[in-house]
Amino acid sequence: MKHTKEDIQNIITEYVGGPTEKIKSRPSLQTYKESAKMVATGERKLKRLRLSPDDRRHLRVLREAMSELRQALEAGAQANEIKHKRKMNNAVRLANEYTRRTDGK
Image (cartoon, rainbow, N blue to C red; front, side, top):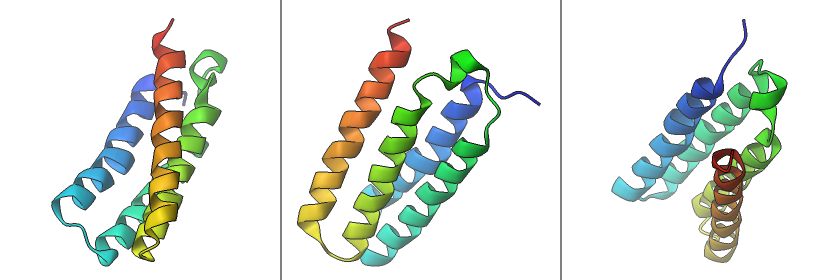
């Protein structure tokens, strides 16, 4: 079965949007840990998608963004604010780059 860009969007919504909202509504070390696990699950699901070559284009940037987000959440769970901010900035930059590359078509 081939997957589509809609499958990518669903993963982003569930495994990036969900944890982000969770952190905003209930910031705690436990929430950061749970959110990092959710993002890691999303990374694995994204990697397993069977996409056409066109849909796969620029996916590396998105996977990198999710990895940076997971690392930021893990740093937040360890109360490492400096690393958390640096990794979050990288995640946002990479996510914006992915959006720019895919919406520019």
